[in-house]
Length: 94
View (cartoon, rainbow, N blue to C red):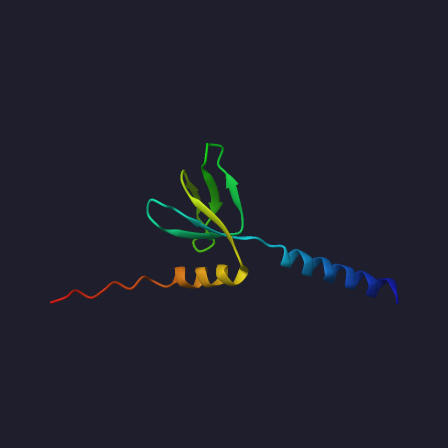
């Protein structure tokens, strides 16, 4: 096997490993119940606060109180899809 082919296999393997190691998180604000989806959560420097980028909007969010849960890539994709859909409001009753 020539060195170029070995290098291609090694790079391909590293990419596959890196893709399989991605972490996905659902961050919920207990006060509002709003859920955010992100791939990275940081401590914001204050006791209990977290800072992250919301994948749906691209906004940086800081929450003083939150629930952070690691989720699968399928749950992450489903959460982004459902989060992108506008909430349907019930029609007024007569």
